[in-house]
Amino acid sequence: MTKSDLVYAIFEHVGLPKKESAEIIEIIIETLKQTLTEGESIKISGFGTFNVRKKKARKGRNPKTGEEIEISPRSVVTFKPSLWLKSHIE
Image (tube, rainbow, N blue to C red):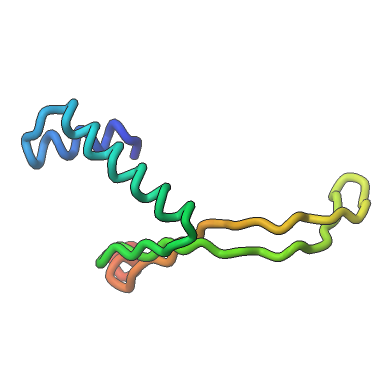
């Protein structure tokens, strides 16, 4: 599913013009990005939780050469689906 698919779904279900639907989707995505950038969690009931997790620096290995390299610390976004979503997917 793409952003335009979401816009079309809002257009179909709610009846808003596509331009307004696109603006709503854009506002939601920007809010999600800003919240995650600030390191906060996002919990959407019935869907799941997005968290920002900090990973420490660690040693890795180049698979081609076998050379050991240092992997720098970084932040990653994780998603944990709700029980309802898990049960409906399975």
